[in-house]
Length: 112
Image: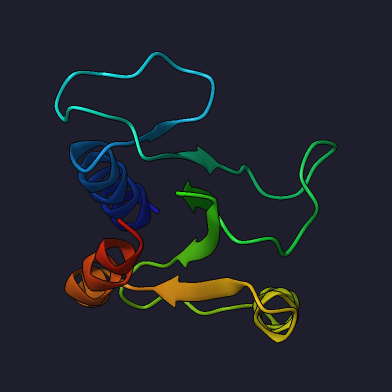
């Protein structure tokens, strides 16, 4: 679990470095202008539907859903279904592992 949390923090630091900030917080001054927001979801329970990806990112009005996994993490069938359903509806949903961080950055940069 620590590996996934460390990876999540790396993703958050990167997003904030390009002007994508946590939803509901003041913008920081690392970049001249905020271009979007992200929200981290906490799975299951009363507040979040099970199976939804870990993060919702919005950049210039484009929605990106990201399921973060540790190196040896695996998707549940419900997570696979939700990612497929989002993509089939024309959204962008993906799973990202630590070794795919550069691919994630390239994807984000297309929306900047």
